[in-house]
Image (cartoon, rainbow, N blue to C red; front, side, top):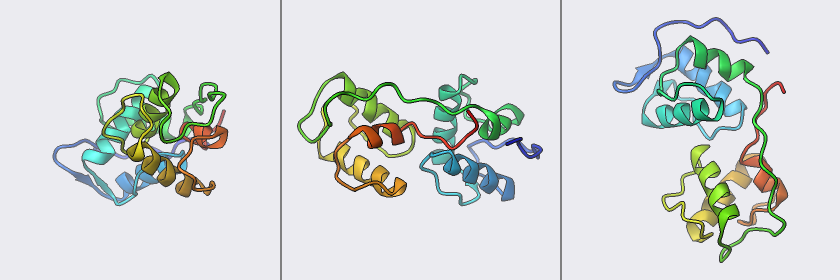
Length: 157
């Protein structure tokens, strides 16, 4: 889908940028699978999500929504998840697969303070929130569907 025309000013924080175009950009990222509330206020959470979106799509991670980031929100191809681990991740799991999933979930807006390769109650809580947001069974375990959902974007491929 082609992006609607970019309407200045650029969105950046600080200070908080507010308005209908902020809400429109936030809604588009939410539509793409980012955990973002379209409230029309570009503050620290929007900036964090913007930087992670820019990194994921190999844009300059400056946290500013200008014409390039705006267009990418509509036109950048969907990102693909790396292959899911063979085992379901659950409380007590540890290792590289846990670290990869924790980092991706945290980057997408399901906060995990301790991205540390150890799947604990904090990881399970983020997992449950992600599962609920995507209408998946809320188990707190990272199966194939939950793994894939952490990278899901509804965007042209």
